[in-house]
Length: 269
Image (tube, rainbow, N blue to C red; front, side):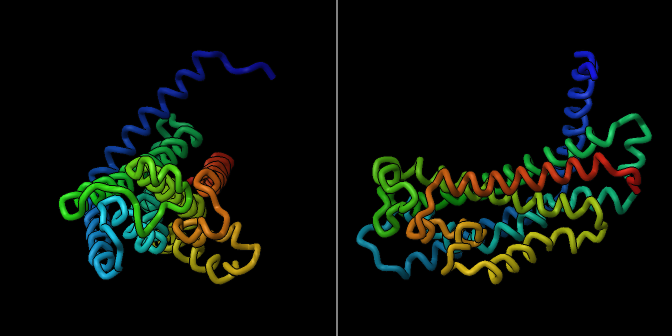
């Protein structure tokens, strides 16, 4: 079969971009994202209070950031992945929006691609915003300096030479993980309309994997919880690129499956 004409590919790409802009406008108008951002920031600042209880030769803002993210985010990200942007398709299906949009000439592939891209962009903005504001908020209370108590085990050389870049690298892990958790909800919402079930699915899957995959066995290599406890992960032989690749691979699987499953459906009610 010959490839489609170039102008058809350009038209499809333009349609995806228009749908993506429409999706992002809807997404960022929701107060839920703002409320979740405030909740995430408050919890991280609560972790900073716990940081004061730990003895360390010299407290620094970078060390505090590593401490609070390692303490809070392994439990928070599955929740944010589903509740922040994971329900966007389920909401549309509840009101019958997919069938209405596709009746106006939008293809199923265009629609689900815009949904997936919108979920990714929304999740990245949310988690990156929380982490960025938290790091800035810690700087007035702790001096800027090297990591001492928490040595940056995933990349100790980078942590010693450039602690800011190490913190940004760790943030990339958390952002990638949040995007992957959101993909779980997106995939499930292809068949499930119940918003609560869709939003809670990453948490349920995460807890199930935590108890099913023993962290003291070779199964730790695929345990999602072990890939979020970053300071402990270094002792298990994980690397920064390996952890990022783990979450990127999971996210790619869930989003690709969601796009394929939705595109092959015949009933979009």
